[in-house]
Image (cartoon, rainbow, N blue to C red; front, side, top):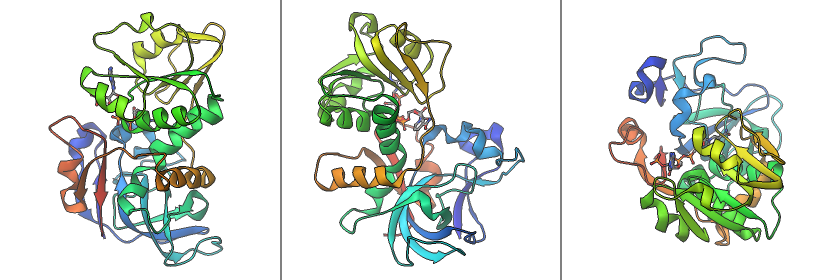
Length: 305
Ligand SMILES: NC(=O)c1ccc[n+]([C@@H]2O[C@H](COP(=O)([O-])OP(=O)(O)OC[C@H]3O[C@@H](n4cnc5c(N)ncnc54)[C@H](OP(=O)(O)O)[C@@H]3O)[C@@H](O)[C@H]2O)c1
């Protein structure tokens, strides 16, 4: 099968190659999935799990990509709950070969059914950004109606999901990003927008929840805005910073199929829009995943239509 691999950590994203690899075999409790479309998070190259397995052994060449939509083509021993021919989507294990490939072997417990009226490209765009937003807002941030959310990177893949889910919950959403992101953030539902390059974060006043996807000094300065009982939620690693009278949570998104079912239902009934930028074939994936221009949404790679 064809797959996008990386072999050399020092080469970064430029080291991606389209190669022929053997089809994976489904292990116990796995399904083998024929991948129709896959998403990609640009920081994957820097994740330790791209280079080492759980035992700390080198695992390169690694197949990239960990979110996808496709069709089950075989079941491993003991696998229950899914059938051959079923449309599915979800997150694959960070430490195993990924989804920028024609086939992937995944534990069935990580997958949710993809409804027949949802395109594979849309399905592939939802798992990482949708679940990250859901878990950050609800599981870790305990968001309630009437609260104020500061959604950093509000025009990005995670940020657009955060904005829409927070707004649906009845929160007041302040989106941030670069100057050119203003209209997109507002279109995705932010009540107001703060341009991080030109406006002052400190002028915002108090918020209940900061959803950080940027880290560094933006994260540190945001901690000071959180009112008593509020939460700083980040997915970029926690700096040495805490809200004075609140919580700070750094988390890695988990594969929770019941939440995927909630997310995809919102897409079907129009409450949630996905944020897809470029769509490219597997043959053109290396160029698409190393864009010269700024990305405008999640890049989706398609294997079949
Ligand atoms: N821990 C987890 O489980 C988890 C899960 C998902 C994502 N993540 C992480 O979350 C981050 C965002 O992911 P994503 O998929 O949403 O990426 P994305 O689509 O690139 O969105 C990030 C947005 O934030 C903007 N941004 C970044 N730095 C900024 C700055 N200093 N000032 C203003 N705007 C800035 C980006 O603009 P530019 O493109 O111009 O920089 C982009 O619009 C990544 O670091 C990713 O690794 C972690």
